[in-house]
Length: 487
Image (cartoon, rainbow, N blue to C red; front, side, top):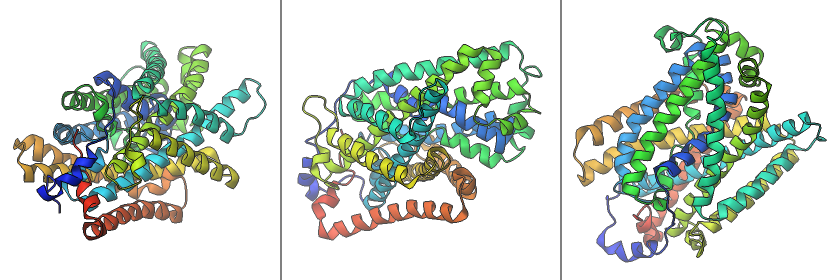
């Protein structure tokens, strides 16, 4: 187990890690935009919610979103407090390193890179299929999904290379459009009384425990992907010690309440007793059919278009997250130092951004040459793997927060440093068990494939852990710098 702060003998090594940092002027709204964009409101409401209704706990799905939001709010208490003492674009990696140990932190960093890379690849598959299908419906000759994905990759590459403020402006506009069309449809459903009138049945225990509540909760937690971004952008915030905690709470509450509201409106639209059958009959088109029925054709068309821009927003958000993880690791000499140098003009992690662009292009090409289905294989498999990895990371972070404050005594308030993080840890472990138990369903594959993907997460963590443990004697300077940077 490592000390909370680097030992005095290693401060010279740590000093080199302080030479580079990212720059930006993000406020609370900007960071919240990045987080909500990463969670992709329209992708969740148009894709995730119908699946949860069909194979999860049906009318109880809205309550599942609220349950997950409560667990993440408990997690956020310690997470936000930690952000006041550790400002590092490595986020989970840095917190786990400073809290548990350097080997555990590097293991977590490897898991984070795997998770963020796979979720971005998942979305490239879904984006390509969605855009190709939309263009085909407009009479455009069939365009391969991978070509659409590469087109998006090119735009993401340009935006990701530049200053984060430009990405925030793009994501902010796209996210507001998504929220607007979803809100219009939901209000229309409630105003017209849905199929059987407006009721709060969805929030009763009987509704929550109907069907398969574990699967409902599993899809709910997957909707919070990108939650870590509040701390990832801490170095690019105007006042990180104030901005990050506020943005964290605001993002969790907004996401949880909005998705609970949207899924509740979907239940009202078809009736609590009929929504499961409706979702099973038309899973892919349920949300769009609801828009057409309760608002009109223009809403359905608009929603289809915004589905494409929603997925693009996710691609950009996760591209930025991966680039910043690589920057953090480069700055601490885990990978080439070139990754740890910010752009002289844009203050961005440009080398990590370029590397991520090239690696994504190569993997998209592999998927395309293998002839994998962009939705049933690429999206389902990769998003399932990412969900598993990120829940595990949050659980480790909760444990790291508890240990950090027990050792450092920088804050001794029981609720903030022990009780809330412990409750959050218990909730996250519960979610992790649900995901592992239902993992075959989540990825839509075989048990063998599920075990393979679960093994990838374990291997990534063990590889990072063992590597750091070896560096303690073979590369002491590098070992000393792990998780040491505090902006």
